[in-house]
Image (cartoon, rainbow, N blue to C red; front, side):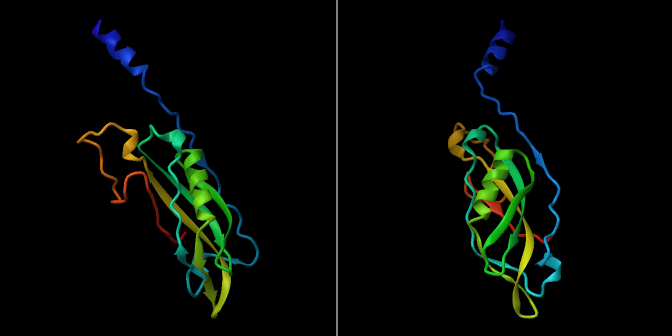
Length: 154
């Protein structure tokens, strides 16, 4: 009797099956520098945080790695997902990074196109869970439901 009640309780919970993404990094286009080949690295001047995918509300955390080109005008081009815990995390990260703006990379004082990678960590909003004292605090100290991207050379 107790076992059937426990099993019945599990059927009320919606479980999400994650669909991971693992793509190869695209070939570097002609005229685009790697982050290690520039004299001055790009610097973000406008950062947009991605929205947490509503469809993944039962998933506590996720991550995505995006590769893109910072053009000489500071805009983002050719953004694509390299890795993601779920395709929706990847799509959200790409949508956000396309809105970013940068002070462009430089070689010999001239602005150039430069390829970068950017990891995003997603933390589900607390509103999707019951208020519980044991709820984990996001490791990056970011507010619940936010993601935090940091630029890392690759």
